[in-house]
Length: 306
Ligand code: CP
Ligand code: NVA
Image (tube, rainbow, N blue to C red; front, side):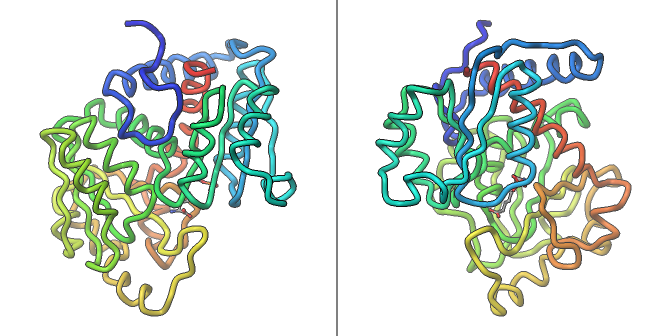
């Protein structure tokens, strides 16, 4: 097995092969072990990552920057509003110019088409750090975290409960590639993107089931996952809040899951809204393991791509 991924950019997990997932997880596990034992792995010496942000971030920004530092390279934080693209320079020109200076571009964008513009015009790898459509590096870290805890994928049931966000889309692809059954409990008005439903369905023998009943999704689940009801760039209308209230992940709902279920959330969380404090801060919650693994998985991605 060579060390290269089958893709030049990380745009959507739909594009990755199952072998790519395994390469990333294997590398992440090795880099995590090195990090924990204090071994320095300066494999990206003299490499620079440009990190462009059109939206706020805590985890993505800090974990990518720390990843580059720990691998001996450098990351530049770029607030998109302070660049010439904020004054109308095209993404095509921006991507061409940045390609002359840096070894990789990570971008968090409002509109997914901006990621595609970067990919078409960049001469260096582009990593999607979240768009309105998906969040591939989050789902990769989540699947790695599930593997660490459960030591398997096949036969697991992951219940997504709440708004079908960008993170939900990436998990649908990831579960499809890794043979995890994904059940999505969502009000009819807030279902996942139709194209993603069709593509995820084609990916594997595992099921992608969509229901309006949160109990059905949570029943015997190995993982219960939720995300904010108000993703960046959108506001939570009173109507949406009302529709989502029955989808709150709380003590009553998780009673339907397996005893050793894992509670997951990409963060940031809104305690008392999509999840109650007793669940997110309870013994089954692995939210900080997920957040920690962003560092190790992204180090793996950077070392395989840059
Ligand atoms: N989960 C995640 O991407 O967090 P940030 O928005 O803080 O980067
Ligand atoms: N769905 C959330 C994820 C944040 C990491 C958002 O887009 O705001």
